[in-house]
Amino acid sequence: MAEQLVIEELDLQEHFFERGWTDGLPVVAPTPDRVQAMLDVVLADDPDTLIGFLPARGRGVTLEKAAINAVMAGCRPEYFPVVVAALEAMFDAAFNLHTVLTSTGGAALCAIVSGPLAAELGMNARHNVLGQGNRANATIGRALRLVAMNVLDSKPGESDASSFGHPGKFTLCFAEDAPPEPWEPLRVELGYAHEDTTVTVLPVEGPHQLAQQLTDSAADILRSFAASIRHPAWFSTGKGGHGALVLGPEHARFCAGQGWTRAQVREYVFEHARIAADELQAAGVRLEQGAQHDMRPAADGKLDTLRSPDDVLLVTAGGEGAGWSAWIPGWAPTIHGYRATRRVRPAGEPLPECGPDGCIVPWMR
Amino acid sequence: MAEIVVLRPDEPAPPVATVELAPRGELPERPVIGVIANGKPLAKELLDALVAELAERLGRQVDVEQLAKPSAAYVISAEEADVMAVRAHMVISGLGD
Image 1 (tube, each protein chain N blue to C red):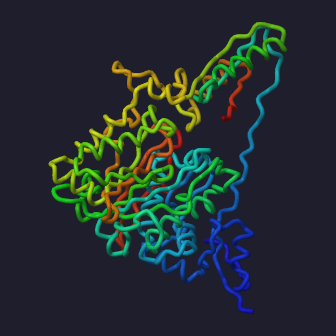
Image 2 (image 1 turned 90 degrees about the vertical axis):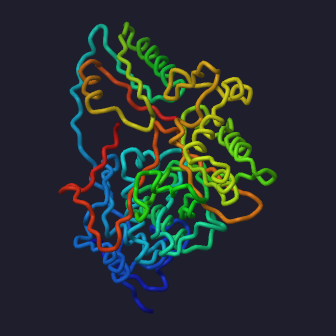
Image 3 (image 1 turned 90 degrees about the horizontal axis):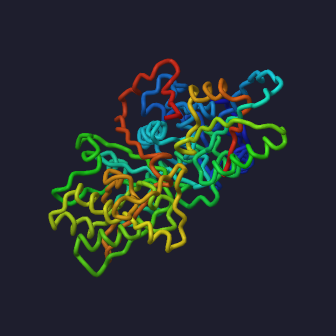
């Protein structure tokens, strides 16, 4: 059980700032009753139940610590199942949480929610989807970062060695908007049921907004996006990366309406994001060889910017306008870390049994 | 002023594991130096230069046992560490950016 602190109420914010327990913004006081309300939603009989454990740090996240930080982030209790599922996904070995939280590359913890629960929670999937103004989006994402800072000790300048970081490290969480017919939603593409709600987490750089406003040609739209994805100064260019392509409503409608399947979009973007070794070198990029990134070009002289078509996570979101989409690049090539997805358990569904040591995650491949 | 009860959000630092130092013995006439390149560009070249410097300071020829990680994001496996410990008399294992 977490230690109880008795603090003068007016001193609470300063106390939390001084202890390094915030992300730089004020927090909601994690009182026992507020924390218990979170735990009640997930029917936590034992608040010390481990969501996951990082052997590299000797630290684990319990339901109670997650709930405390979710309260501090401003979450309503009904958001907590999404927070728990996102944390479970972050502990997936493929995500490589220890390195994601440590790297100089400064990764944000991007969470994408697909399914009916998103609307029930009032999550935003449309205008300003990657911006401010929606409580569920803002606080679910913020809770993940506070857990990382407070429970997993990921503190800037210490075990968080981000050279720059970016604003998404405060919070980066949003909902998928229903895709245009006949496309299936993201969760179905990932193998889940329509009625499920899933959360997919990705370690990411900052989002890049993409404009295509003078054409309705799906091929032209996607080719221009791929050109942005293969930017020479992006860390993963030519090294086999991944990311989320967030198609705005106009662009998604053009693609689906012109008969493109989701798989065809991903394959087209993958292919056109490949880059000629000569183009990279002309831009001043040195090609790694004999090191972790094998940048020997294929027979056609090109390198893969994305590891495979499957590494384009295709999401529909955003509001109508002149024609905008966004690319959210993975923070590093897939050999260093990758996305992970978990189903959000509805309120009342118990945690899976992970054994007496909790869901200990191997941190080596 | 009113007082408020709150729950502590962080985790105390876990206890630091204690390890026993390997016995320090005399190096053989031709020691084996283990190097673990972390996968970053020029890591191997830097370690080669370090080994050459060590050989010069030791005043003898050395053999090198090399291990290159496929990704700087992961540590070597326990099995790889055991093999390195058996084969090498000293190991250079830490390398940053």
